[in-house]
Length: 81
Image 1 (cartoon, one colour):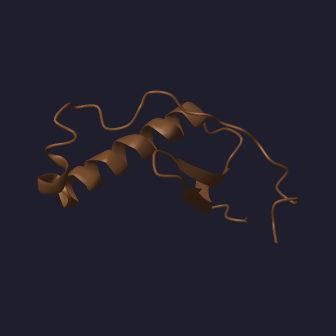
Image 2 (cartoon, rainbow, N blue to C red):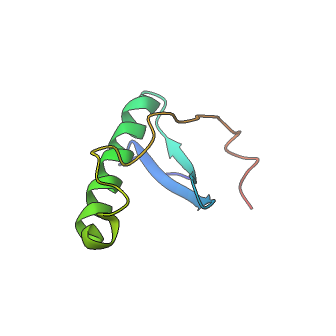
């Protein structure tokens, strides 16, 4: 995915009932832990804002996402269709 104006870009999205899978094309200088923290923070904030009433009984605590995450890498040319 060629995009020289951004440090990262979305490539693919999927997941299961209790977790998500993201395939993201990132600049080598970008720290994956910073990207992960930013994604979790922004998505939790947006989800709470849009679905606050529905989520209130389930997520009364400040913790929305689990602290753990997994990062793997793939050859950029091999995953493309």
